Length: 262
Ligand SMILES: C[S@@+](CC[C@H](N)C(=O)[O-])C[C@H]1O[C@@H](n2cnc3c(N)ncnc32)[C@H](O)[C@@H]1O
Image 1: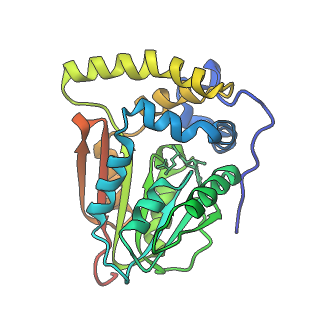
Image 2: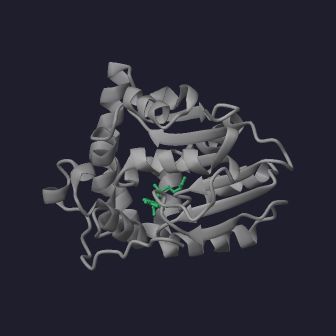
């Protein structure tokens, strides 16, 4: 592994003073690392409950859009967390799956989950940083990142890194929260996401890191859909398309590496 991020020693990763624009915090990586270390054990339960059991179908759609060639494609799932997207890819029977996350506790949970499931392809889980992957150039066919790009401190740098490790003809799949475009749906969703979810998720996890205040703030202050597309194009991806899901709460962005590198 080339780099690791040490969690901050503060038990509160995100308080009001750091939440105005969490993406501009100089120590965002340390705060994000500490936050995921704190909520790792209850992470899956909160995902299922607060997405009303939609989160796994969002990941399955991301896998379908990646068009895995069974037995051939090498998949790298970055910011893999507890491994749900890595395992969804494993079920599509690619040649291999590597899941990478910078929180060791998340990697441990992913390994434990994977060992209890029977998939023909067993993902390999490693600790590593999205912006500095310990993988050679052009080593894989699919790079995925679900609900992770918003959390890295320099998304453009990470997207360049994804392009570096992809072969010509490879695909980048980014699954990320967005905001519904319909004003009525947006109002209802914002009330749920900003006023209800932070309380219930904090209560369920017993969290003191501020993770579920950070979540809605990090979505509302993150880049627009158009800017995400622009960042992928800047890194050299072609045919970049957004695929909104569940009224636009989530979007899968798919981009292709040109078949022959320029
Ligand atoms: C919201 S979770 C998503 C986990 C998983 N992809 C999923 O679908 O549930 C975001 C993950 O990104 C990881 N992460 C954030 N910044 C990272 C970085 N720079 N490098 C690697 N992992 C990172 C966190 O540790 C966390 O596990």
